[in-house]
Length: 159
Image (tube, rainbow, N blue to C red; front, side, top):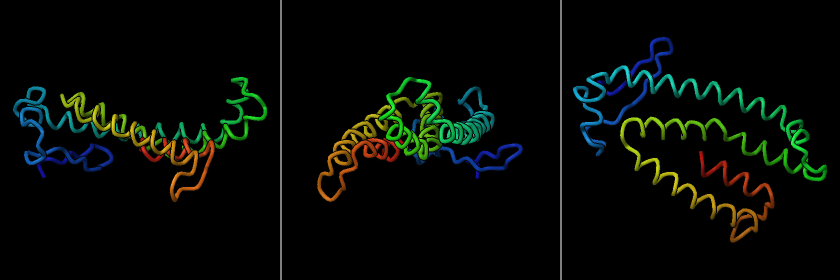
């Protein structure tokens, strides 16, 4: 239980890497992490994730409601408004999950582990490029989706 942080108001457990995780011990040892302030670091990470989920839900709702108006404001040609709204809505359904991955990468980077987020992002970019190709043109067993394909690919691979 030593590697679970309890948030003061919400009491949501946040699992942290343990000695068996393979990460350098000096990053997670309570005696060396920020002068032994492991609990404070855990609480800050947990609160950042909670804040991100709340902001992500608000931004997703605003995007779903105002996507058409935003496209008009940006001067999008009339014939592209409906496909653009559909693209935005598909990507926004995955928005909260994408933001969690961004916050998680920031937490790992703040802890000194910058390689894991870099490799994960590189892997997601490769999957996204393949997903675009497969879903746009309907390669193999996948249906041809046109403009909806990249929206679904970005949502799936970056979440």
